[in-house]
Length: 441
Ligand SMILES: NC(=O)c1ccc[n+]([C@@H]2O[C@H](COP(=O)([O-])OP(=O)(O)OC[C@H]3O[C@@H](n4cnc5c(N)ncnc54)[C@H](O)[C@@H]3O)[C@@H](O)[C@H]2O)c1
Image (cartoon, rainbow, N blue to C red):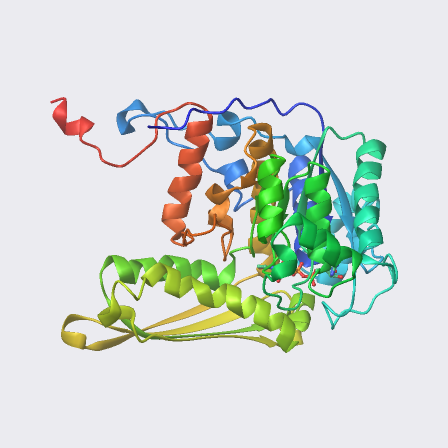
């Protein structure tokens, strides 16, 4: 039995977008949207802005743009706000990040970017050791931080006169924390906040504040943030959309295309060695082993989930998988990734695949952040609270209901995303069965 389609409220009024962190990804996102608003740049990589969706049969020729098919907020209606421990406005942040060319892309929108000044961050150095900056709420308790974030959200809502707000974590990757007893239910979580328990990271306070204020929360980094039993349950109860974790850009994007190919052709895998050089602030933060551990967990899980070694022990039961990120300042945001993949085929004969991806981290991440903001707002208007699994397409480590294994295959994720949009708008699902083209003859 199919679930009835929801009623989607229209995207009237202004959409406030609050980015936690105003670094490379957030400033590239903001600058790109501001350029696109003025027709000075194309939002390439954004499905919400540039992709079409097929409706009905292949012979129907109905392929509207996604943005014309579902009621999305218009770019013109987006208003920005941010928190960051560095006091730099969005113009300075974008210049420092060095992703976009100043003359070509920043000067034309400099006035708008300069107006976006970060609010004081809920920040503690224990969670991001390689950042030392002054624009922070100070040494206050976790309870006070939570209240201050909530007050910031409301002030932003009032001052900017926005009708809806979405929050997206574009801040540094925090140190590795596993869900513990503090994260199991509201009583324990509240108690841990009052006790300033180190298991309550700033990202969890932002996520909690967002849910309490009815603001959808998307998590672009691998730290837990909203991925705990307590916040998952609260978001479901309060019908607030949540999703995560960790934008799927560069190397993992390639991995989630290549590994399903091996699996589809039942080719074996003996080893996958991935290494990267990266010179931006994210690379610097990830140079600390405790912060890298969070990223490593997010990157390592992918192969196992895709290849299902328990079902295919002969092919995938003994895979050596290694992922490294090396901080190398001369490259800035222009990451270079290498993959050496040792595979085997017919009768066990070995073969190799080499991938060398010279990518631009934030150029790949910005369109994902834009789509997440627009689709999370859509989900909220459609009354879809809790985990938005249909947005797995954007994440390295998709958040799913307990007991489910995440779907990593990029094209399965794409089908899930588009079928969800069709379902929301009461259109037929596309199953690719295709009998109708032959049975009618
Ligand atoms: N660019 C990509 O391709 C990509 C892919 C996947 C995930 N990510 C993740 O996205 C995040 C952002 O990446 P980036 O390249 O913009 O990094 P960045 O270092 O340029 O920006 C992160 C910003 O977050 C700020 N910050 C840290 N703790 C904060 C807090 N508690 N509150 C508010 N701000 C805080 C930092 O001061 C910094 O300015 C990182 O966690 C990164 O791992 C990026």
